[in-house]
Amino acid sequence: MEAEIRQRLDEFIRRKGLRRTTQREQIVSVVFSRDEHFTAEELFERVRKVDSETSRATVYRTLGLLVEADLLRQIDLGENQVTYDPNFLNKPSHNHLVCIDCGKVVEFEDDNVDIQTDSVSRSLGFKTVRQSIKIEANCEQLRLNGRCPNLIATRLTGKRLRKKR
Image 1 (cartoon, rainbow, N blue to C red):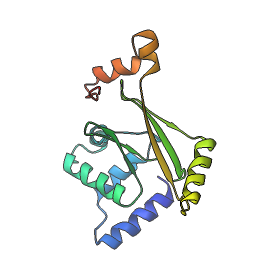
Image 2 (tube, rainbow, N blue to C red):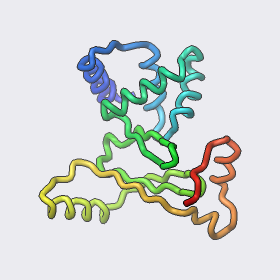
Image 3 (cartoon, rainbow, N blue to C red):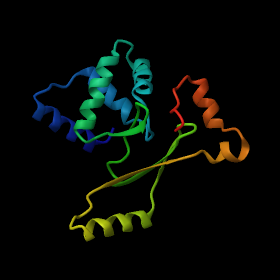
């Protein structure tokens, strides 16, 4: 885990009057061991492989703490589905494309979007600090081929899919 993340978390925990715990440290290590989005349940499963004693409640509380500390970004996918993003700290311009068919989340960067966002912000008297855009779209593979490997994988893992509108 990066030293910057550890330092920011330690400062935040100290300000909140909390203490460092072994379970919290393990959860944080698991969160930042990969550079990919995850759900709370996926994190719980990963943490349980490291420490089978860690409770679901501890994982959820630690997620809330990391979001509050601005170390982890929570992305609302709609229909009460949330994913977490650990890799936005070094990318203040952070955008996501979410497939409403299979639930796949694709991260993207685009200089044109950044320029437009900055232009809009300035014209309204603001300075952009960070941006996060979520685009909801239909799965191209499903539309063109009538099937999508991501949709099949999602169903096989038992994940709930969003209801079509």
